[in-house]
Length: 366
Image (cartoon, rainbow, N blue to C red):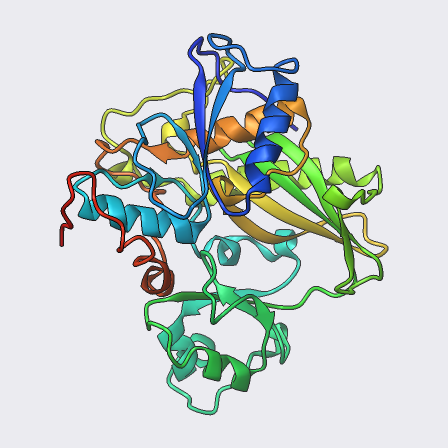
């Protein structure tokens, strides 16, 4: 199982923009990255980071290609809208496909998942193959599965367990093109973990327990930030599963040659010989253990650039920040098969956040 915890060998200082809220996120990055550089960042060293903190209450202007960008999807949508109207390049980032969970084999997810457009769910076609106004969930999802926007969240449709009637009501005002993830409930969870993995070579970059359920399957939890203690044997299981998922993602998501960006021939670092230009970007895995089970299930696969900076340790935090930076797409790049495309429901909710702010030249572009 490959493990890689550092990528950059550049002598130039690296920059990471952190767009809040919450404000504690930037402090976690600063604390973790300072520990990784021996207690302070030294410009010119390959482990040096400059953290630019933004409160998220106003748009960010000083973005350049090569900078890392941590942000909630909603803030990124709002920023992209404002910068486009200001005549500035919008921030582009890589992410796993919105339906990635539904593409994984059941042997890894260990629960059933459906990802479909809202219009097909409302008509019943997502479950029956043809319109059926009185549709119900298939047996493998049971009658009260989890549902959420596949690539993020909106205020009126947060991740929750819903009946078919509840889901029809919740989606009644959604854009038909919105992708919705519906997943079978996983019973008896006792621990949850986060792992950062690079599908290019299935390397696990960072790993950390995130919370412990006080009672198996219960909603009352203790987080790692509050001193939660984790089963020691679970780390090895998380590392092994994360590496397997990374290799699987590379196999099932690798774009055909026709979609490979022209002129890209980046190779994996440290002499790995892996072609990173055509591999999926680094991703964040949310894994969980059920009581009495030694193998974790995968609950979510998310972009690294909106993942909580858990206490990954000095090397892990540096690798995590570097993974975020490598998910930026240069403004001048044309084709990028893994570029993040905001969900239309999220765009409708968040795009106007910065509309009241003037552009740098005092004009508002249409």
